[in-house]
Length: 69
Image 1: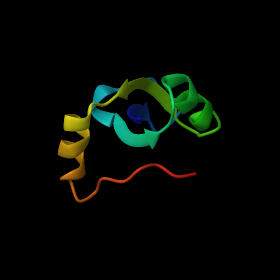
Image 2 (image 1 turned 120 degrees about the vertical axis):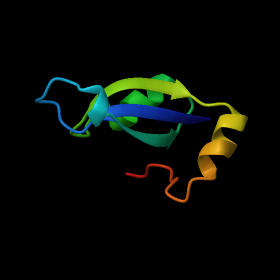
Image 3 (image 1 turned 180 degrees about the horizontal axis):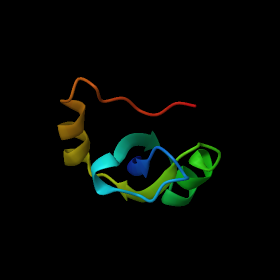
Image 4 (image 1 turned 60 degrees about the horizontal axis):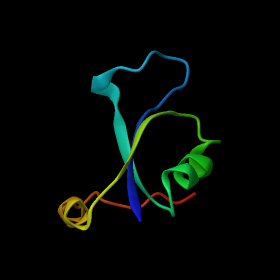
């Protein structure tokens, strides 16, 4: 499954919607996504499982890439 993770780049600042970033992670569940990212230096706001149709749409963007550690 592919998940879209919305996050802020820093843990030290209050989250601001305009600064929200996103990345895509392949994992078995939302819990696994959070475990994979727990040591990263950013604040996770929301993790969303994306549908096949949503994934196809996102793949049309030339900047689309799955996160790799």
